[in-house]
Image 1 (cartoon, rainbow, N blue to C red):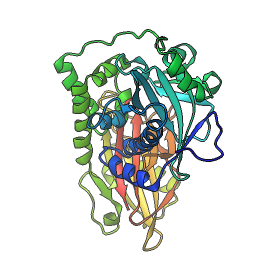
Image 2: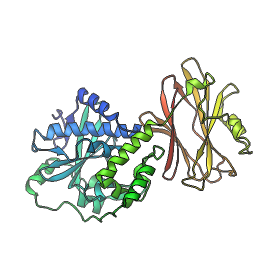
Image 3: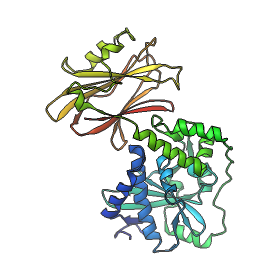
Image 4: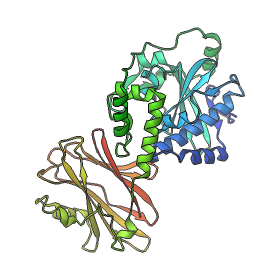
Length: 394
């Protein structure tokens, strides 16, 4: 149903608490916090749109791929494809308050079998219990008017190029049925079985946070377009994530440590510079703090260089601890790789702190933060397409 007092040119749709609860529960099958949140937002958007559009102009509206196909999409890409009387429409949901542009993942534009006729800009506000569809564009317009962001692999089209009157969308369907809405799309390469299997193993590793950015787009698009390999990759991601250990920091307070987390003195001989001094002097933590370190191998990316992730915590009271995180070089290196990143993520996958190494940085650190017993967070080390995430619970 539509909400009262909505702009008549837009579609403002209500979302019930029941739909929100169901969508959240269904999203928990996904492998990572970010993919679970993506699935949650997309399912809310999908339910609201289908419930409304099927009672209006398109009673036969359906999802392009139904379960188990749909989950594999949301593990990697934002957006949902709907079939409306022979044409494909892709819903692109976003929580952003700013509606100055529409960002469409490249997969929905440049994979031939995925490309849509129309793309709808959708603002989702779960707390306010509404979904707002505020504009649309076509494939041809995206290819000709949008800016392609090679970093995120998205087509970004300015709001001034979108059609803001959604009444025109219905009219376009009724009276422009034969009009060509799609631009030409370059074919994707054919992958051999061996190549596809290797890609599934590599990109299915939970250490690679953004699989879609891990290989050139043509290779990625060819892998994702094949339903069999897409499902295999989805399953591999789930298996890899389920085997990932969550570090319990409350056990550190009891003197119980995971095998991979060692005393920071272990790494002093590996790096004779001021590893210990930097950590003590810059952290603001006193001698009673608990400090552990873990060796991270970046060998897949930069000739087997390693870095050391250091975590220190000090109890504030029985329910709260203060935490400091740093990243240091080790081995024969005096400096961190330029542009390597260290980030703090909430359980939802949202990045709330991030620092990046500059030229000749001998360490980087996050701002000191507090946490309470039972809270979860993640620390991510990222370099180019390689990303490793350590999950913690206090």
